Length: 153
Image (cartoon, rainbow, N blue to C red; front, side, top):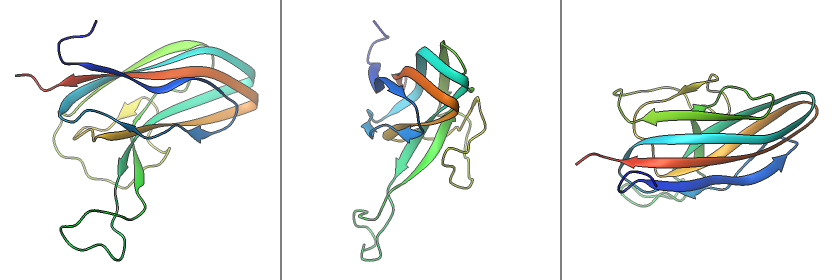
């Protein structure tokens, strides 16, 4: 059992992938200060298989008809907030990320954040998992879970 008021959630159910893709949007709890995200790879095959796992934040965008102060109805964009070290075999990888660290500005990154790095700042409320698969006839079975840690009282 996690600490009081933490939320443990499945970001991507156990799945077998052979090509690059994305998981569904996951609505996380609001007002959490940190997250512990785990990638668990239970099977890997192929010639020189590689798996890059990203967690991305969904950010709404305005449509040309949206009014100032109104809700956003345009096509949302995604931005990398963490990129696990590349996996080539069975493994469990753990990434700890927090809101600490101050302000951060930069260009949108879509499957482009450097491996084994994450961004600081607000973690956002809507996430998805994106994965890039490489190698010859690659296949990975893996899942992604998250423990959201609330702000201390």
